Image 1 (tube, rainbow, N blue to C red):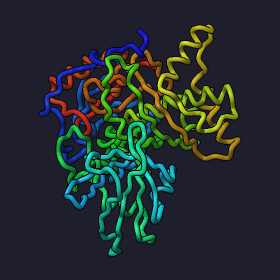
Image 2: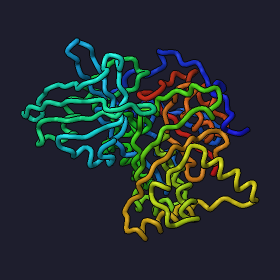
Image 3: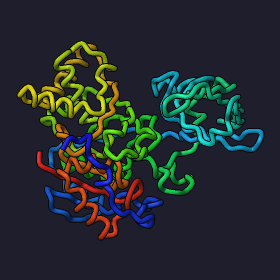
Image 4: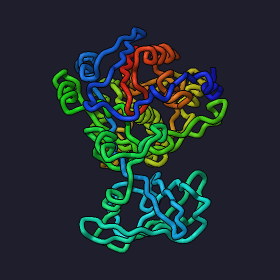
Length: 414
């Protein structure tokens, strides 16, 4: 079946509200672990995950850090306006954005929009004992968001410091509760480093320093990449067929060292979380482009939503074999060498659904996802359509679901 014509209703399952974990366990590595091993299902405790992984493998983590992206402003009329940061507009670079002093702009969602027709909103607060007046102005509407201008009157204060004081952590909407102080710790992975996400890569929430040390002791190499998770990760599929669903753009950064480690491991890796999957699998198609044209820019390496399927269709028509995964990765490594770059910065809109051929990931650590979601499609593609037996087992064996829920380890054939 053409993946474009998959009916999202075929990926529904009953998820009672009481099965959604509203809070994490006190000890994050004590969550339950469902193990899907080439079709066999068993369960364990997450801290035992190293014993289920092959020695000598490469494990890849997403080191993005969640920012306090939700901000509230009160109009003189008393109306409360929510400004939800999606991605930087000016400057567009995340690192430069958080260092800005006095002015920046973001693409944002706006809550209670009908009450904010025009004009500036402002609020005053203290940052490290310094008074700051922050004002926001909605300049123009975009396709799915708004361009919002931020200005503040104390140039000694960076935007990162403003978010730490004035922002709120954007916990997932399906938790149906307000964020709490504890979420600032529990909704971050222990290895998070690079600020930019508005949602956590939740598969990583189960890891502790002890588990990571055990993984090292087990002879498994660890590498990190960065994909900043956008609010689009919660965007429901509203079309009957997934062809009508537009994937959001996600920005990635992968170090050359990680590319070379992937090459050394034969182009295979254990992915921690669906964000790592989307990054790793996008690398293959970026490498395919560079193998054909080594002079492309990083912007031209962007992977479009249906590109993997179009590539497969073209190969089938021409009667050609796909480019070897290691060769694709070598094309990226050579590209970085030629341009004296230590890392690759690009973007992806990849959708992974049944019919997708995995090139790099053969083991996945993930949580249990929402019904009728693109994340469930990604899992189904990895297990050759057998997602329902995994979810039936989890539902009948008291597993906790979604961001703060339990974990699932999926091992498949190469």
